[in-house]
Amino acid sequence: MPNLSPPRSRSRRAFVILNPAAGQGTVAAVRLALARTFSKSDDASGDEAAYTIHETSPGEAIAKRVREAAEQGGYDLIVAGGGDGTISAVANGLVGLETPLGILPLGTANVLARELGIPIDLEGACQLLAGAHAVTAIDAMKVGDQCYFTQVGVGIDAMMIRDTAREAKRRFGRVAYLWTAFTRLLGFQPRRFLIESDERFVRSRASQVVVANSGILGQPPFRWGPDIRPDDGRVNVCIVRARSLWHYITLFWHVILGQHKQNANVRYLTAKHRVVIATTKRSLPVQADGEIIGETPVTVTVVPQALHVIVPQDAEAPA
Image 1 (cartoon, helix red, strand yellow):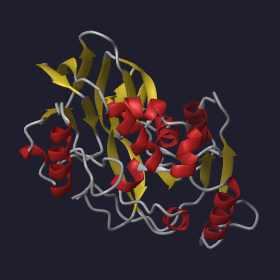
Image 2 (image 1 turned 90 degrees about the horizontal axis):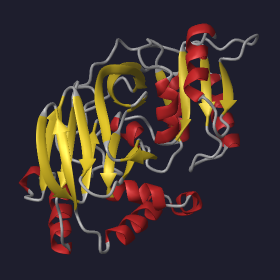
Image 3 (image 1 turned 60 degrees about the vertical axis):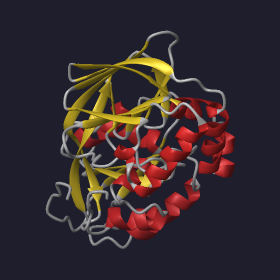
C-alpha cells in the first residue's frame, strides 16, 4: 500500500494549470467539467470561485507561477491539466511543499495518473479533485535543476517520443507512438552503455535503458518490471539487451506474463541516490516524463517523498 494521508473531504480553492495543446479533450470540455463538479462542492461560494484556470503558453515559466500560487495565492490545491510533460512542469513548482497536486490526465499516455489509480476520464478526475480523496507522497528524479516523476529513458523510447509528430498523437493516440517505435526498431543496433547505479558500475550493450520511478509501460498491464513503485525511496534501472526479432518476441511474452526477470535479455539495478547513464560513442536522446530533455550523458538524482499528490481513498500500489 502507498503512504496515504487521512482522507480529505473537500478542497477549498484550486489553481488549475491547463495546457490547451494537450492531446485529449478540449479547453471547453475541461472548463465545463470543472464547473459541473466544483459547483457541487460544499465549500463552493457564490462570492468566490472554487477554482481559477490558467492556460499555459509556449515558453512560460510554469513552475514559478505554480510556486507563487501555492505560497502567496491562497490556493490549497494546484491542478495540472495535460499530459505527463505538463504534469511534470507543474509538479516542479510544488516539490518540497505541502500543497498537493491534482491531476487531470489529458495527454496521450498519462503514465503517472495510471500508476496512481487516478481516473483517466475527465469527469472522474474532476470528481476526485472536488470530492473526498486522499493524498500520497511520491519520489522524484532530479536531472539538472528539474524533477521528473515517471521515467527517464535512453534508447528506443526517446527516439519514439522525439520522432512522433504532435498531429499524429492527436489523431491516433498511442498507436502513433507504437508505429514510430516499430519503425525506429527496424535495423537499430544496440549501443554500448556505461551505467553507474549508486557507485556500482555496469558496462552493457543495450537498445534501451530506463530509470523508472513509475512502472507502467504505456498502458496497464504492461510494465517495465516488477516491484517498481513511486513511493519507495528508490528507482529501478532497466537495461534491455535484446538484439533480434526473436529476442523482442520473447521479451514481449515475458512482459505480458509479468515474468520480466526470467528473460535473459533484461537486467535490473536499483538506486537510492544516483544513476548516471553514458554512451561510449555517439550520444543518444534522453526523454523524461515523455519529453526530450537532452542527450547522454545524463545524471539522475533520487529525491524521496518530493511531491504530494491527490489519489483515490482506496488507492493501492500497482500489481
